[in-house]
Image 1 (cartoon, rainbow, N blue to C red):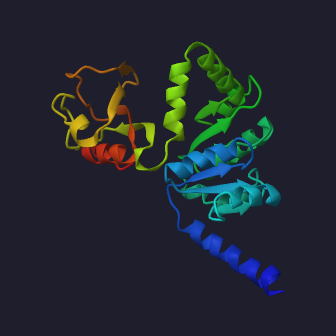
Image 2: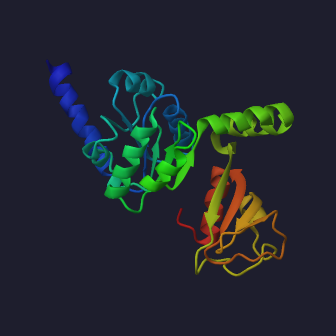
Image 3: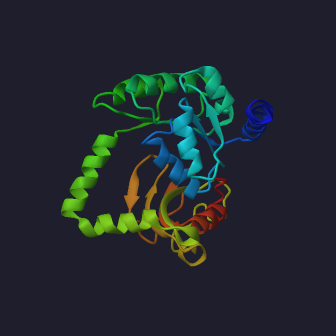
Length: 254
């Protein structure tokens, strides 16, 4: 009785309290074949997130891989009350990783109505569903089939590049490399300075891959005289700590 009734109620209240304290987190809708890799990456990046999964057995197996530490809500992500329980109003982003396109569309519509500012990245199962997800309010759509096909071609034509990306993604600890983007904020220490004048490489030890200007245009492999304008984004390759140091340098709160 204590374990199955009182203990379960106590654990549920404790989980609700922990979720209610979150802000700026990510909601992962679906803990299946796609969602588990989303969770793995968020966990490796040490970012707060809440998993929404309607099948208790699926979540139990998933949670066991993380020693039962995943913040979660058991329920249907297409239900507004379930998304609210996951803190969608306070979330900065949501990933819809459900098995069917209609479910992902419903989650997108609900999330957009509950939080107009949240960034929504939706899984597109079938070709042609991207347009529907965009109309529903998704900021970005990802097709696993298209991504998988591109990876197959990369393995065929550019095996060394694929090996590099694999080794980067499999890295662990403080030396794990990631691509990231950092915003140059107004009033930051290096706003208006050129890359030559900003000791990014020396202090942050990151590789600058590109800069996206305020007009949305990319400058790849930017030259040393490229200026860091307010509102631009610097795309870098580096460790988590290196990216954090760069954020501090340019005034990006992350």
